[in-house]
Amino acid sequence: MAVPSLTQRSSDGPALASTVNNALKIVIVGGFGVGKTTMVRSVSEIRPLNTEETISRASADIDAIAGLDGLRRKNSTTVAFDFGRISLDEKSVLYLFGAPGQERFWFLWERLFSGTLGAVVLVDTRRLSDSWYALDRLEHHGTPFIVACNDFGGPFHAVDQIRAALALAPDVPLVECDARDRSSSKYVLITLIEYLYELASKRAADQARAQENGDRAPGDRDEQDGQHEQDKRGGQDERDGQDERGDGPGDG
Image 1 (tube, rainbow, N blue to C red):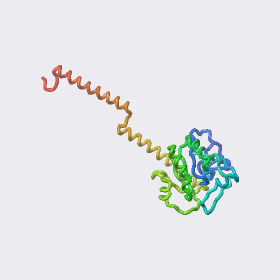
Image 2: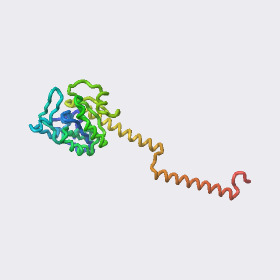
Image 3: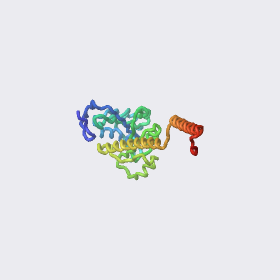
Image 4: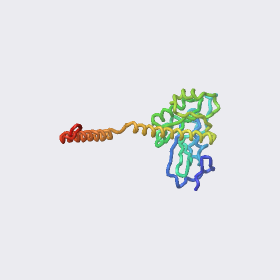
């Protein structure tokens, strides 16, 4: 069965190809209501699995976004995670996990991070502080990530301003996106994959450079030092033997 490309999609999605033997995991994290579920839905080739539940009256004041022209409410919220899939080729598949944004569900993030290749931190530039916990957790786990600013039509912020506000390292990619748009969400994922490839290539180059510079294990150095000392003793013994036979330089 032919595996669809990133641009192909059906309402229910294709079945997973029997030739797939390489699964990659990416997590989409961020604050409450930044568009994580929307991004998984827009880019997944299958009908996404989601755990959206209607916001109850008891949690209405908790699950709300304050400070944005009064108060903006959501009708539903993710209570576990979202799941989507993208087939990369006949052997590789990308699994997407959207993490819940509310603080009371943050304990689930530790499990979602397990085995993760990398992460997308989705942010709303009108409330950047909601993304600090996600950044902290990813840095704590040593998980590579990029930051994607979802377009909510808010005021413009320069890239340098956003990078400074989030205290991002200079090499961490920062992109803009519209989580509702498939091509835009796909661009975010491609940016992450390219960043992960860049990091892997740099590690490989550093290892090769270390070997070239003689940065070997102590056991290897001891073995070579021992061989060198043995060669020195052998050469001295040979010279001493020549002197005893009288066939050294100047004799004859």
